[in-house]
Length: 103
Image (cartoon, rainbow, N blue to C red; front, side, top):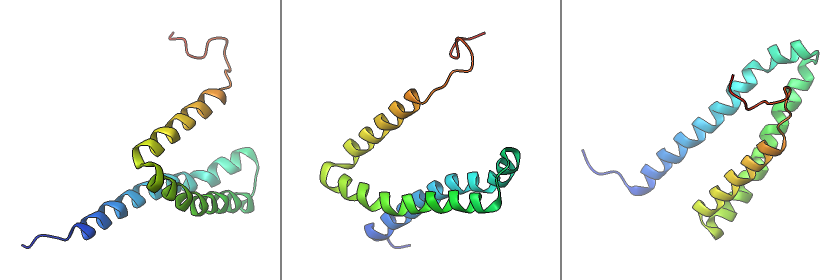
């Protein structure tokens, strides 16, 4: 067997990463009808949620890709992780007096 070109190897890796991220998002979409039925919304709302997610992805990926090209991938990822962690911390709504306590 001959050696593969670096461009082909990179394309395979990027394709795999794209598959994994899309799979993670769309496995949620498969379960949306069950959740929607529980909260009382229709199929149109489910379609709208999926469309908004995909549209946001179409807009965000090129923007943050260009940012990563200028600032560096590691720095961009670290900032993104920090923003996500901050958002998750701020949006916690405890339903018990001590939600993080171990019982």
